[in-house]
Length: 110
Image (cartoon, rainbow, N blue to C red; front, side, top):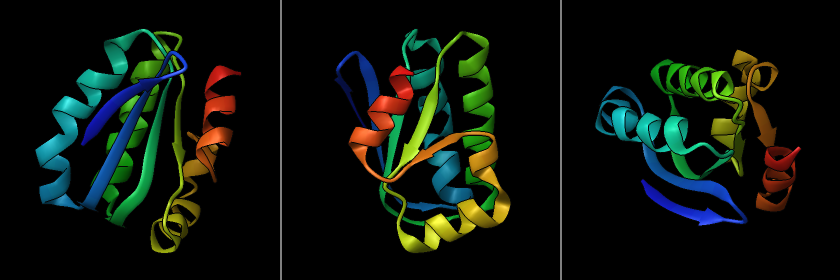
């Protein structure tokens, strides 16, 4: 997990598999990075090769906690296999999904 700030937005880059082991390794720091930051966050999924239900749960719980503090979470640049899981699970109905970083930034600022 890599974290930077761009245009006042927390930018997180994830890579690898978001299965049981992957989520267990990052969930606490992922949530701690996004929720208390007091600003919107965008998450680059371009290097995520697999998204399991635990990863979806992590995104939903983090997005809800961030929203409770008035912040937005946007996922972007999902690979085709990850995008298929996002679509199948209807994650886009709960969390904003963007194709590019520019689109993610625009959604995060909205």
